[in-house]
Amino acid sequence: MDPTNIYKALSDESRLRILNLLRSGPLCVCHVQEALQLPQPKISKQLAYLKKHGLLQSRRHNNWTIYEIPHPQPSILAANLSELENFFKSDPYAKDSARITKIDTSVACIPSCNS
Image (tube, rainbow, N blue to C red; front, side):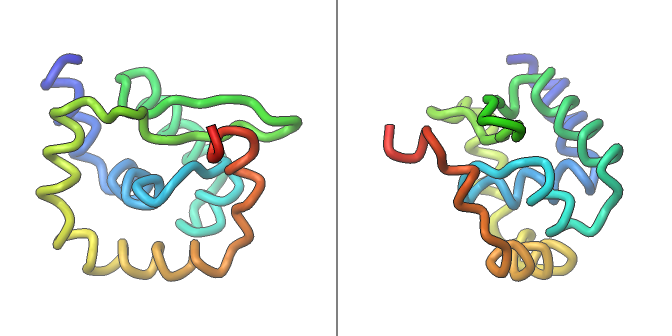
């Protein structure tokens, strides 16, 4: 995993907001879109960017594409997300996190959350 690509990915606020949401578990595009209140094309573009550079993985479930942070996390990603922990408590990240708790995201856990 190229550190340059990771830092480029982390330099965009939308991508940081997405990673913040996905720290809690897998989500589909529609969940991310609703929580971030951004247009679906922008969300899809940013998710594709993160996946291309190895910061996310995806799987299909029926009509949904579910995105999640790889397990185990690449060490450089884990270290950076850990360093950003306090930053993620500020706005707009805290508001995103509050919105996602009000959304039924159970479909994103099927079938991998129990595996």
